[in-house]
Image (tube, rainbow, N blue to C red; front, side):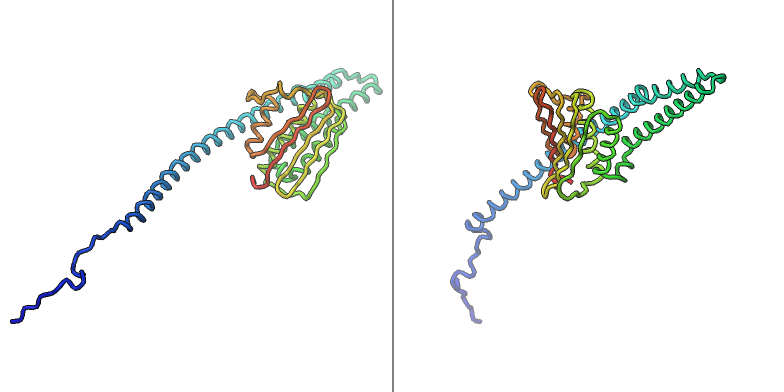
Length: 268
């Protein structure tokens, strides 16, 4: 019987370590980077979820305040305007003198005009509050209708200009912007004592700029705070946040007020 003795054959039969130092120098950094990435992603997602919850909470608060303002507007319009109109009509009809045909005809005519005015005011109120109506007409047409109503009331001279090529930003988005414009004009009516107002929509490639300028009494902006107590400026700030818009107010006593709203197109 032959006995064959195997030599080391150049170290081929010697067991080698599975991982060398060079391997470890490559693998350890990869593992550390992967672990860091996983932990970082986890905390980023946690922060994003927390931020989303806060944004949802803020939006819900804004929606509730908008609803409350809507109810207040309905109550104010009915009490201060429509109720008065119908009350006058009732007085005319109650005091009819059937023996005086001329007076009878005049009072019936006046009552008819007052009732028609009350119906028109209700229709105007309904249109201003109806989102479906806004979606049908869009931002520009809705502003034009609002400007017509102010013209009819002869409150002040008002001009509306559109620059650039209009492009829709979405009905919900534009409705919030329209409410901001309404709030601005409401502040002009209530506080500015203005004789002229200019509204400009400037459609640019990367943004939409809205400017509302009046020649009214103005105010000191440094004394004005964007609070959350339901004031007009506070409401405008909240709505600007809802559409990620920038809100600028430039005003000085006796020099009028400029309100500028800047919305990047990427926010849609």
